[in-house]
Length: 301
Image (cartoon, rainbow, N blue to C red; front, top):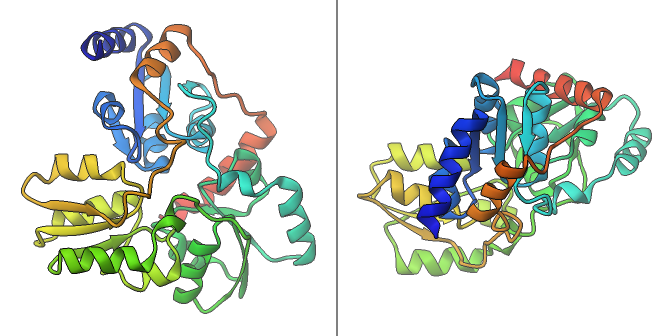
């Protein structure tokens, strides 16, 4: 059935001039059918460069929205509309507006892991890889940061500024605890520890390298080390193993699973393409505001 489904997806991809994007945390078989595998912003930028008419985004809601923000002329499909990011849902426009009113004139820096509406309320966006650089680029000595308090704490350690953090967090990354790292280090004493900055600060402090998903992949590829303990969602292990056959990768904990990332299946991808569902639509005023915040970030690099 899998081969039949894959063949049908490939056929539909040609017929609809579609490109399939998969986040690093997706199921292995979904990653394998994709044209591009990567992090959310990188995938959206890649899709914007292609001549595809249809973008099939295998990820969570805000990722597909980001693709639509950058490629409004393209049809953006999300195979599983119930695949939502819990952290992105932890902040509302009302909540952000209230925080802005409490701190007038303080610039708002929002993680790309937010809705289009939150991006539109923000002055600038950031990714997990450029959050420190974006914070440094802002002239203000104070910054409102949404929605991840753990990424905010990581940034606060790196910049000489007051970070006013929203209280959101990633339910998957907070499952990774210091004892998990310690247990894996005991089993694999020579392994390097690579963790995502959405992790708790006491986990980050145990890492040899702190990086985004694509940053972890680049580091593992270029490192001379042969063993790595990976402190992020376990879906990334498929790509790491696939691209580095001579190296070994161990999850910090098997508990680091995002259930929403696993909701997308090959069958859902097939049905989405066959039915042209579910299309992402964003009101132009919100899209334009969100794009302005993304463009400001991209100018920094």
